[in-house]
Length: 151
Image 1 (spheres, rainbow, N blue to C red):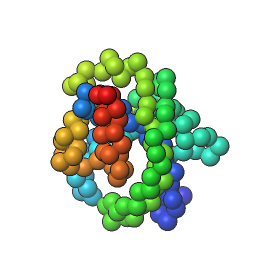
Image 2 (image 1 turned 120 degrees about the horizontal axis):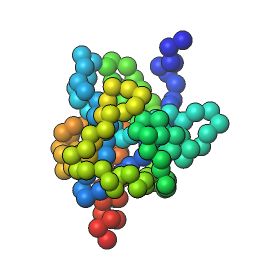
Image 3 (image 1 turned 180 degrees about the horizontal axis):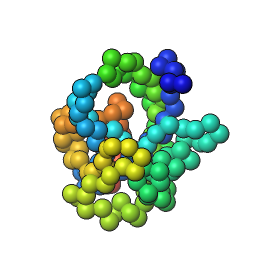
Image 4 (image 1 turned 90 degrees about the vertical axis):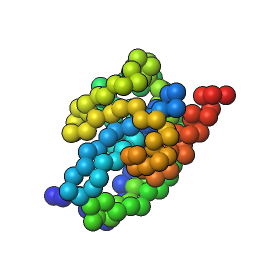
């Protein structure tokens, strides 16, 4: 059965910011949309917490075990994509793993459960919508993390 287009989806995403760059998932252009970036993460399954979901998603998508996931914010994202409306409640976490430190600035990782890749993108490019970043509000959180790391 196809997903109900009128449901509100709860998702958990993990922000990783290093040296003015953010680790993002890149979605290639299709007939329905242009190239865009999304913060890694995914749906919260029944019976798991948002923290458990973000930890599970990083293992499923990248094979990376998180050593920490600190709650940053809960935001709401109402959007239209490919002619369909979407509505998400976004649980955002600052996530940590020793594996992030060893990722080269030009590293590109294939996401294990779909056709996308993950790579570092400078915050200045994301500010310029090159590519657009989703969910809405994640750039402001990433900039907060970048500022905190400089202090």
